Structures are given as C-alpha cells and as structure tokens.
Length: 140
Image 1 (tube, rainbow, N blue to C red):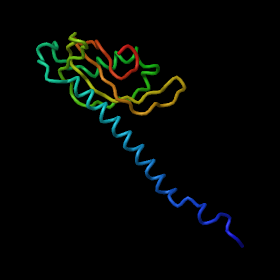
Image 2 (image 1 turned 120 degrees about the vertical axis):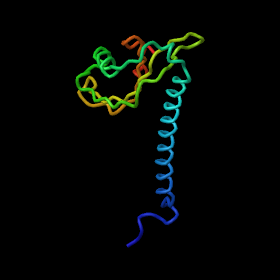
Image 3 (image 1 turned 135 degrees about the vertical axis):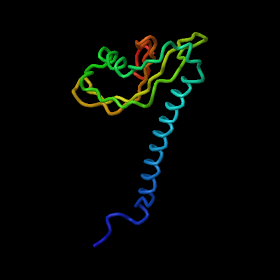
Image 4 (image 1 turned 180 degrees about the vertical axis):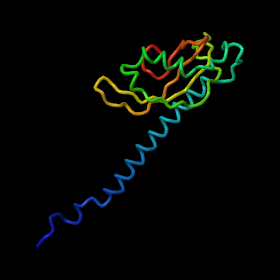
C-alpha cells in the first residue's frame, strides 16, 4: 500500500503551531486581565478617606440592593467580594467623584437563562448609595 501523502506534504509543524496559537491566546487573556487589574488599581490611588464620606459598613447590602436594578436576573447573581471598600476618586478630566470603591465578581443569568461566568465589576459608594458602577458596559 502506498502512502496517502507524500512525506513533503505532511505539515511537520502542525502541533507546534497549535501550541503556539494556544500559548498566544493564553498570553492575550493574561495581558487583558492585567490591564483591567491595573486600571481598577489606578482608580484607587491614594485618596484621603475624609473626602469619600463615611465608611460603608453595610457595603454588601448597598451593592446588592443597587444590583437589583442593574442586572436582568439579580436573584440569580452569585457575588464574590474582592476585598473591603477602598477610598477612590473615579472622576475624569479634572472632575472629582470621591467615594468608597468596592470590587467584586458576579456570575448571573443573562436573558437566555444561562450563567455568564464570573465578571469583574466595581461600585463607588458614597453616603450608603452607589453613585457609579464599573464594568457593566453602559453609562460609564
């Protein structure tokens, strides 16, 4: 029996190219994650807590109540808190918006009833209410 392919026709670097492709995708995901982390960290630069209002002791409840109006199916939301609130200034172009930044990850159902996977978000709290959301893709 003869060979189906000539030896010169068989791509001998197929597996190497595949590995490089997957390695590149892993690198891109890591780079995007690092950029998001640095962007959120930049928001929380050294801000005087006195400018941010009182510390929100009940921040989980404040964020939960706010998300009832933001998420399509808030009751399905699974929240993973990423730490305690930190003083932050989320203003742009010289405008200051001071408050306490709470970072969290949410996995909730979309309009098709499927979970979206954990997605990073943030909420800026001042005087026990959310004054700005981060990572929800609209009005930011």
